[in-house]
Amino acid sequence: PSQTEQNFDAACKWPPPIGAESNPRQSYGVRAISLFMAALNLPMLEELIPEGQRRRSDESITELPVVAFSHFYPQPDLYYGYSGLAKVMGSTKLQDQVFALRPDVHVFGHSHLDVDRRIGNTRYVQYALGYPKDRWGDRDPKLVWEKT
Image (cartoon, rainbow, N blue to C red; front, side, top):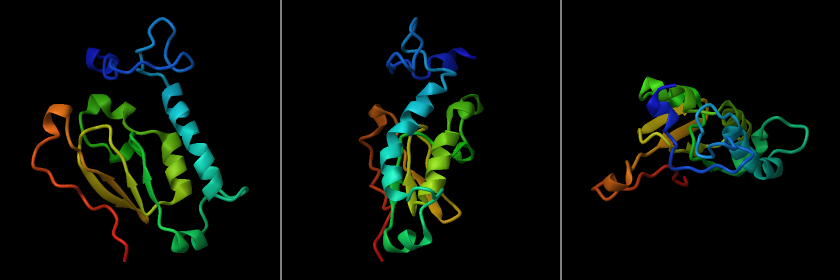
């Protein structure tokens, strides 16, 4: 791995089950991070998706619009930035969860790149505000869902 890849999440300090004991700030190549984050979604997914089903039912889709959120990229193929970071942009576990949830919109972040793309019936949106020094520009909020 390059120096950039090794230090990408240097500001994070991961709990012992995730990070290496010798260096809790090391996140490069640690698959446990995406598994840990995905596990946080399970209680809500279990509430929305009946037991024995792999996806939200067609009936619940017409009754209840869903806007889902994640910090991380929900699909690797949505990332179009620096190729050296492509392998850490997107979680197949999160992708599976979004597929099962079938949201109308999924809002995400992480890369500081704008994305507004429809895959199937889900609109994927990232409206990058930039780094802290960039956030106070003249960028207006982005409407991602409007009740019809």
